[in-house]
Length: 212
Length: 419
Image 1: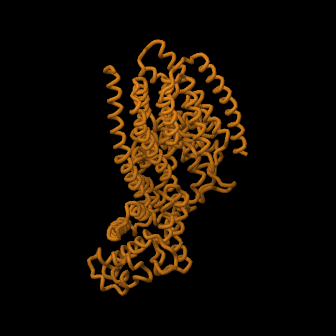
Image 2: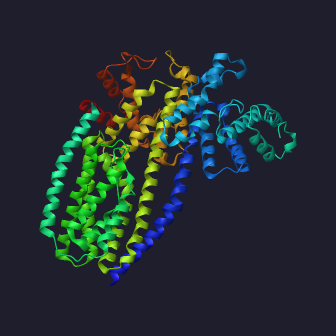
Image 3: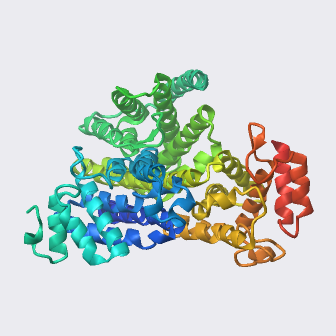
């Protein structure tokens, strides 16, 4: 074989090695990371529409990630959890602007409350129209569903439920009442496993739980 | 209706391509056949081609896909002549198409077209290789000749079929596919050349190893395709959110984006940029998700406070889109879509050429469509009676130079007149 042939074969070999590393390691991470970044657009849109929610998604995501680590989530479960945290409230856009921004939730009529309580379903229905987000539909649909509602809830939804309630209550009533509220309702409103993880994460003794 | 006519068109194309493929292949085989000694590669290469055919990248839901058999087909052309190459290509394509179509909704004519196209492309490749071999002895150059002829013919025919059987325009397909494929294609050419070398020097044991780079290219392209899909789905999801907050935007966005793309093309923007203009036009009002719909739909004149609130939507739109890496070129177009050439627009008060041309296009197309917007004879917007098209055009021209860009309005007039 002459020099040109050797050059062709050598460059083909080098290019192959590089390509294997690129498509095996670099590219999948990059694609995942960018897709996850772009999910921030959705939470930002919700928070711009309802300024009272500003920063809430970040709080929820940080807490949910810590719980998920404690619960030994797989990489795939972690991905679904973080994406759902960004997307769970997109259905709030269907709610009237004034309902959330200009009226305290304690003054809502029962019809208004019912509209609000439909938002997880609305979010879920929207995600159902987007093929690459369809695997999040169930999680998003149940991010406010009670643990004892006799449904089979995805584990990501149970973690989200605890994170959302905890983040929201500590924002409105302070961290102490948030802890009290979540710990007191373990087993009924919240999944006891997740609440146990929350106790560990918050460095509270597990014995304080009514359900241990 | 649409479906039947598509299938009828596909049947026509299948007959045309089928006759062309059969004729061309038999001519090539009859003219170029050269005697060759059978060897182990006569089995190994077709087997590898078959395996490679099982590793496709799906381009459309109708069964159109890119496969990576070429290294082994070119190898067959070298060891077994044109007949070997064409037979390998056609058999691999047919077998895998049939297997994969089971239980899926892919019509027979499209499978037939796939096979016919592979026969035509392989024949053209064989002719090119023969022509190259009359001027050079180098196997590398002969392989490159085969690859280029095959790729050009194959790509052209596939793009033509897509164009003839779907509403997508020819340039659209070419542009999209090229963006995914130039670097990969160069690597592919290198791979084909390497396989041709191995085959012609008789290094048989290394030939199956070349399935590794084939797998790598295919995996990379698949991930790129997924990346593009995610991009379009992010646009869809954001549009869904906007429509939840402000239901009137439905048909409006579709018309505006279509027209904006055409105006961009007519103004001489590259087709890639024109496509971005279309996507920016779909998203230009995404900031209105954060606007109180009661104010936006108010039939009466807005108070200064209310107007300030509505004006925020340009900045909010840019803020919503900024986390998405693929939107980075269009964020500033959306930020400035309410700027005016006379400098009295918002949010920054930019003048003339300081405003991105894409923003000026969106401003004109959006304003026109808002003026004529009506749904079933009723005003599309509570605060405005729809105008007739001539009045709306006159209104645009009256404000050309102050509110709207002169050149854009002129081109826009042509586009509207052409439709």
